[in-house]
Image (cartoon, rainbow, N blue to C red; front, side):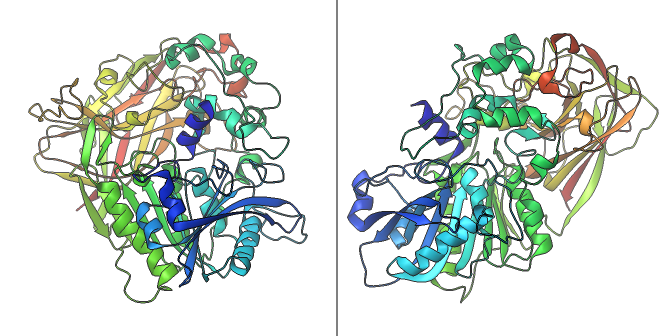
Length: 615
């Protein structure tokens, strides 16, 4: 059961999100074959192939490579649904699943975010690109009734392998859709701008323990901590080094996290963005505006390809948390906010199915009706389409943090707002107590009134808007700050403050009054030691005014007339991120209890937030 919970969390795919069809449906229309495909270095990768029983025509191949298993295993055991969606399953594709190198029934050693080798000279030099090439080559030559076209898709970690497939350069690869794709573990999932995502600590065995043989059963154990109150558990645990007792030396990933606390060569070579050049297959990047796991990846993967390649490259961003678009939920709801009905179904039928059909079945011929950017406005709650992202009619606009106001007027008189940041009483990132040991996705739209009322959270907001303001694109916080210590975290949250007469939503949040609701729209942290370089951290000079810039990921959100735009700034966000000692130590993973000290934090009035505003 514990294994399945974490697979569902990290490997959110259409396979995991069983759709509304019985287990026998796939078996009625598809045959299944299990093979071990030999790679160039001699290792074999377990592969499950589902082929339509109707052999009167040829079909494209749609493939997913995953570290989360091809289960169920056995030639007579069928998934409840196959392919990216029920729509595509019914349209007919040869659907392939593969256990990546070192996982489950495949040979070799697993390498978390295996580094790409650009110029391979020996057969022993293998990576996920070569494994993808060798797999596609075998499938094209050995699977009956394929039409010679291959597509790849995947969500979360399988999304990373989807991006990686673009580097295989196999001529049969025509269409790829990386979805909620990891791109760099120093900015996705386990880190945000150098801050360690403590909320993922319990998941490290999933990635950090090598199996010793081929297996259909999990070989790792997740830690038992004896409580569901994560805030109290991590607070009582103290420094990160006290968590070592839960993991033995065989948890490679936990040791890697500790040994590589800055953006050194270990992390840099595992990033994939720098390799996305001259991409040939058609690409459709998919993500959710409220993805608590992988928001950085989709947005930056799209931008990287857009800058370096001339291929078809489009982006879809919806009102979803991690992988919601693969569900068949009747409503799209994140936490306390409902965004509409049948949004995922619309995406599956009218966007995703069209993309793969056009490039895999129609060979890219005829009219392609998809826009460059299909993005959902999370304020007005409707789809928008653009020829480019961010849209051409969006421009940068600065808002200054003066007093408790968020204003377009620059007031530089040297004033500041200050607060005491106490590691013994950190600001929680959610009011929820009954947590499951993983990041609650609902926090991305959660009511932030509880934080606004704390003395260690600064609040800046506009007056009630006299007309709607639409943000479309990235947000940059250019802060001028000081700390009485020598290290500090800086968290910036962008919040939509609803009007007093906001209608109740009893069907979504019957326990909550929506009057003056503080909906979080975007948030991000910067570990202050990395303010100038993620590779070379440096301390603050105590009480010295210092620039700290924080890039918040893109938004598509309309603040309606009568709403307010609010900014919250704080220095703890617990236990989403680990506690900064607020005194500089070389490696926070080895900080001692005496290193953690209360400090005074200041934000000066020449700090500003730069929005990308639609004109």
